[in-house]
Length: 117
Image (cartoon, rainbow, N blue to C red; front, side, top):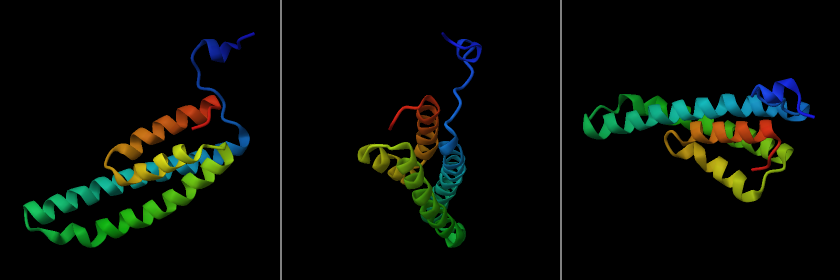
């Protein structure tokens, strides 16, 4: 029998062991994505406008966020029992502008539905 929440389109409840890792992953996916967009803007300013000012902090910021993103994504992957291919694709998402946002949505939907990546 289908519950009222499922019929009304309410999001599925995330299993308790995955709730914390998913929230941490989501926060870092957004932070990494924003930092990568700042780094992209810094590259454009450096080479198109000869203004290297942002490069001094944008690269380091993205690098730090990306390292933490890798650790948290692997933690979630192990707990959610993702495939190696799915894990690698999510890990690479932090290196392509805007892709970390897309990957975050896909990961969130799959984890909420209880599906593996």
